[in-house]
Structure formats: C-alpha cells, structure tokens
Length: 141
Image (tube, rainbow, N blue to C red; front, side, top):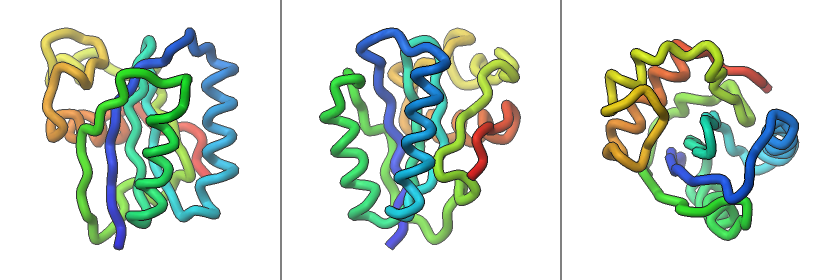
C-alpha cells in the first residue's frame, strides 16, 4: 500500500548549503533501497517535505525524523493512502527556492514566506505541488 506523508519542521541549527546538500545526498543514497521517493523544500529554518512509498517504510522514516535532533516542532500536515506517486522521479528532490516567484507564497498565505505552520495541511499540499511545478526541482535521481 502506497502512502504520501507531508510534514514541516524547524531546523535546530543554521543549515547552510553544504549541510543541506549532505542531507540530500544521504536521502538519495538511502531512500531507493526503502522504496521511498519525495521532495524537500527548505527556506530560512523551515523544512517542508513530502515522502511517498510503502506505509511501513514511510512511517519508519517519519518516526526517525521526529527523533532527529536537527529537527524541532515536527508537525504532520498530511497523510493519505495513494494509488500512485506524485514525486516518483526523485529519491529526494529539492525545490529550487531561488527560482520561486514570491506571488506563489502569497497565493496560499498571509505573507511571501514559507510558513506551513500557519495554513492547513490541504493548503500546504496544494502549495507544495505548485512549488514543485513552478520552482523546479533539483537533484533528480
């Protein structure tokens, strides 16, 4: 059974480009064996991530993330059973925030900043899908 899980968290420490690249490399190396795909969006100190795969594999990965000391304020935004993946092309892609049109964020929230804590899970998912469609995704695997 395939599922899609979306969560948000805040980084406990500053995350520079090098640290973010290391996280993505580790995901790209580990996720294929678990059958997990997805996309990560990082802005400021906020992670917004969608994971897709088998129910037990996605749940295990999410539980690992909730225990990871690099994350705080981990919030489950959306969890659903799916018939097909939306992000099957990436072991772990990354939304290219430098190509983001701030008007997209304004479409879904009060300000042109990524803040999944201030909107519903459904709004976060709609915004995430549009981010992927318009801001491009890096790190295809």
